Image (cartoon, rainbow, N blue to C red; front, side):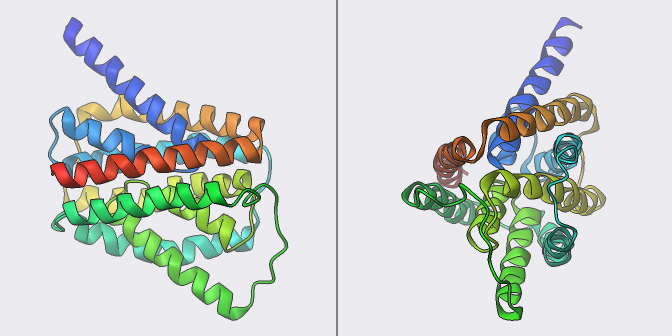
Amino acid sequence: MLEFIIFQISLFLISLVANSLSAFAGGGAGLVQLPLLIFLGLPFSVALATHKFASVSLGVGASLRHFQEKSLKPFLAFFILACGLPGVISGANLALSFPDNYALIFLGILTFSLGFYSSRQSQLGTKDLSINLTRKSLFIGGVVLFLLGFLNGSFSSGTGLFVTLWLVRWFGLSYTKAVGYTLILVGLFWNGAGAFVLGFNGQIYWSWLPMLILGSLTGGYVGAHFSLLKGNKFVKSIFEVISVLMGISLVSRGFLS
């Protein structure tokens, strides 16, 4: 009985730390939580489905905090969902059979590059920019969101970081606002769609979910609160550190898998 309690507390702490960091930096929960679930004994497909289901609570927790600020624009929110959700569903349908080691290495290199690129652009994302979104720029932005949705559904790890930087770089959002869009739309809706597909086709380890969900819900709120509290420059720095560390983690997992 004592071992069971300690194990459940450990699951809560893993989820709390992973999702707090993710809510603060705008992504990366899967880079911490997913490998630990595999380390604790779950097969990749089961760990992915379980993590994806639990991570929906990250979006719920973050939404509770960000909705208080009323910072989301309806058109952009709808656009992100319309472009990304088809990619998520497509990626999730392939996730259970797709060999992931080479993809993890590639994704890790890209994630590392995100942090490095952001660190070299001192003013990137420190304030909102007024960008004229033409039909061409919306089309390109939508295609990239679809591809990021595909990665989110198939590998889960770190794709929130990609969405955050894409919203900053292409749509001109500050880091704080971009993190808000990512946490709510990716964390709640993209992950919700992926969880449904993976749960239907795969296997969710239900006995681990209560503590993972509780940690995800709490971490989402706490991380979102500190993200709004600290401001763009601090969030930018955390984003860069998380991206570099998680990129290294992904490459390591790819070589070891």
